Image 1 (cartoon, chains in turn orange, yellow):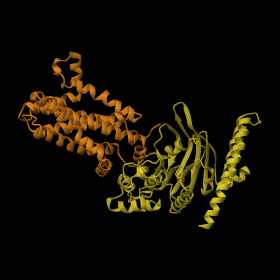
Image 2 (cartoon, rainbow over the protein chains, first blue to last red):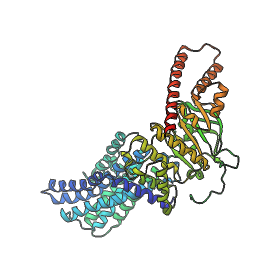
Image 3 (cartoon, rainbow over the protein chains, first blue to last red):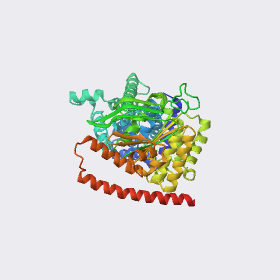
Image 4 (cartoon, rainbow over the protein chains, first blue to last red):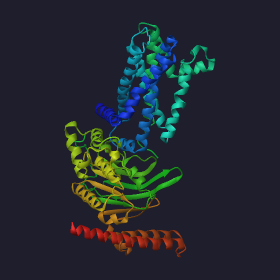
Amino acid sequence: MNAARTLATARRVLRQLAHDPRTVALLLLVPVLLLVLLYYVFDADRRSFDSIGASLLGIFPLVTMFLVTSIATLRERTSGTLERLLSMPLGKADLILGYALAFGALAVVQASVATGVAVWLLDLNIVGSPWLLLLIALLDALLGTALGLFVSAFAASEFQVVQFMPAMVFPQILLCGLFAPRSSMQPALEAISNVLPMSYAVDGMTEVLKHPDATGDFVRDAVIVAGSALLVLFLGAATLRRRTA
Amino acid sequence: MMNKPPPERTGTPGDGRPAVHAHGLTVVRGSRRVLDGLTFDIAPGTVTGLLGPSGSGKSTLIRAIVGTQAKVTGTLDVLGRPAGSAPLRSRVGYVTQSPSVYADLTARQNLDYYAAVLGIPRTDRAAAVDQALTDVDLTSHADDLAGNLSGGQSSRVSLAVALLGTPELLVLDEPTVGLDPVLRRDLWNLFHRLAARGTTLLISSHVMDEADRCEHLLLVRDGTLLAADTPQALRETTGSDTVEDAFLKLVESARDGATTSARPHPAAQAQHSQHAQNTQQTQQAQESQHSRRGTS
């Protein structure tokens, strides 16, 4: 691992994004517009908006970073640039962390805009600090980046990689407690939801919604989400092979 | 990393050891032997052409040399070390067949990133990038997105990446495909200038008329090495006028050696007349190129 190469990789990914302003605009605006939509959907039920809105603040970054990263790394694999990089003195960790840094930075901006709009314009009513919301959103974005890197190894085309989104992310959204409390699910599903990282992201958001300070549960949730992201990043690194058939 | 000489520099001109040494090199992909027991040496500071039809295993051999090919058996030493070992990663430049550059970065940004990956210090990076762009004659397009460049231009960006950090061995997979003849000549001149500086070059091509631009040739077909010699020696030993003819004769003698029947297969005969026609066209192309060179 080498800090200069990691930073160069992060800067390169950000430069690529800079040449694609439409993608950046979509990344930043779509979550905000969806929150506004949600606000009016729950026009008569502000309490539901609070809980669902807070959960969505954690889910958006995961979904968007998953898509962006999985396609970006799939392109890297199919265009030959990955093969070239791995024939050069670039460590796998340099590449993975470079991506994580660049998309992490983008996620900070995305989550800040979405959280800011939700809290100040849409009066999302949270008891805790918006900074804690932002922290969970950022960890979620990292988890999305890690999952995207990982699944890109199992997709041969952009069609396939996009299908991994419903396959890997939708079940987590269904089971994370957004639609029904996890404790009220069929016990087998509850057990599954206990091992899915998004469940902890949404639990963390709910803690911030209800408690003024970072509770022990919040800390546990944040650590689990961060740990899952790291674990999946390591798995993603393992899918990078210098020698391929 | 780049400005410090590695402790051991073998395979460079002067020490008498080959830049690439292969013995019984075999690559298996799936159930197929893509390369079957290749044995050859590449002398340092030379331009070696790797010639063969597409599907003959050229790219696989190149990937084995740069260390990106899996399931390589036999001996393969590059610059005195096993192919693909970590210290070689900054000493071997590699150009893939299709340009491996980022379409959504400018030519300069591409080079800047790869230069950073190669460990060229920040202060020297801009100069190294400019030099590489000049070498491939792309300074006027330096700030265009690689994705907006023509095929030939983006493959030159890819080539420029390989020139960064003055590698000791440059391995180029079909670098001149689709280029205009003037540019093709300029690139070959560049390759020879690099060789004169002591760089070893291995250049693959399926166009036989590029053979005479190389000092040494490796002819491959169906994953086996037909011959390894200078273009002149190949023509003389086979009694042919062109390397393409020499290639055909070698293929035929290999086939005759393998089968007891001396009668040529009708399909092979048809193929031969087709090739003879191609050879004629190639010769004409070469002549017109020569005359153009005379006027320029």
